[in-house]
Length: 216
Ligand code: TYD
Image 1 (cartoon, rainbow, N blue to C red):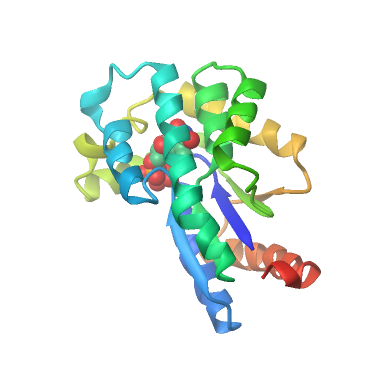
Image 2: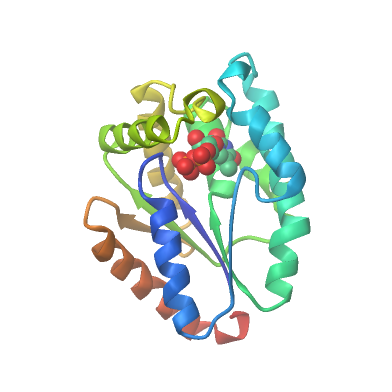
């Protein structure tokens, strides 16, 4: 079973992924946690290029193709083999990030990017995507505080340095995209306590696993 997590910065994706991993492992599942960009060796090189503040001059189309390259390599080398080995794969960001950030955020065409995602994922779409939805100002404020605390500002701050308006477009883009794929993308309110959010996610995931045990 392939599950992806999406949302603007600061929605608590990594916390929720860790909580879901523990829950699934307690139920006897073997779980792989991974992320984009940077889920493969080559991807980690691409991640550095993508997120460094030194690369403010990266143009929108070049940025797009680097994310797609990261995804193609990640699917081929990490995600598909893990699924074939029977694992549950939990991925922090995937194809919907490209639509939200590069289409709704940067202004490229969403349908065209969906087609390019088709090429990159090579038939491997998530069975379930959890969209953590949060007020933009709250999310971005949290992300900036976290990055400053971790000293990541120069190395990985390129997106946090974007305007609030950019992140608001990304958030609305995610919401629009969730309406387009209502079976796959399930929106969870990320404004509650971590435990309340985790319980909502567990409910959705357990239902999905019961409905499709052959993919587990
Ligand atoms: P990351 O540190 O993983 O952000 P977060 O902790 O918020 O998940 O950085 C990934 C950044 O890359 C994030 O700002 C979103 C952006 N991104 C895209 O613009 N397009 C994409 O396709 C992906 C996967 C990420």
